[in-house]
Length: 291
Image (tube, rainbow, N blue to C red; front, side, top):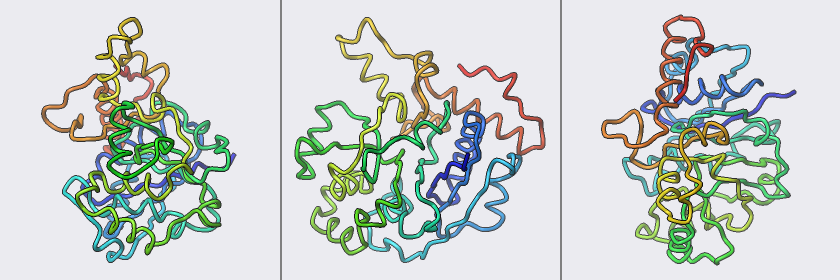
């Protein structure tokens, strides 16, 4: 079976989190991974640090060095650097031989096999992504961005792309992206990459089950606060049995002080594993107990 192609976009500051994500993917996906890393300044030393200790027969790292001028005038913040836009142009810079790619934010952890998601039937849609908001907040974003009620507002941290479909017409050109940004204005771009995904592709996105492919502490907290869900609460054990990708989006990160949540144990467990592998230790997955 052919390798699963992953795409990650980051700067040097997120290398530790990327290693945790790759470690978790290698532990839970039995197949080979070809990981395209889009960047503007990573060095050979950085790539050596990313690869250290991993099984290179199952992991191939591919550098995609982009022009630093790409999105030079795009809205950015400390939490939202220019790298977050790179996924929008993936079909233009990834090789034509790559027909499908799964984009993952570095602040994700894989706890189940990726094959079923990667090889799913996309129903003719060029993109597939998972929701992460209550209906009320989804409607707020639809109103803010001028979207119809039938246009989902989805999280851009887990994004399955049919590159062939994008290359044959669905892919948006840089002028189209810039025009959309200018039309919205900075005051309406709260989460620029995510907002643009909704505005540019709208109903062309297949919606994934966020409980499996974009589960987060925030989702669990909001779900469990709903009185209607009193008899069926979601906890870390439920996530272990049903989840595939955990996403630590927002400011609440398990590697930062003040983290609050029940899913941080997954991150710390795989962080310990990747540190042992980097130090030349044996793969300790057999003795690992993930909370």
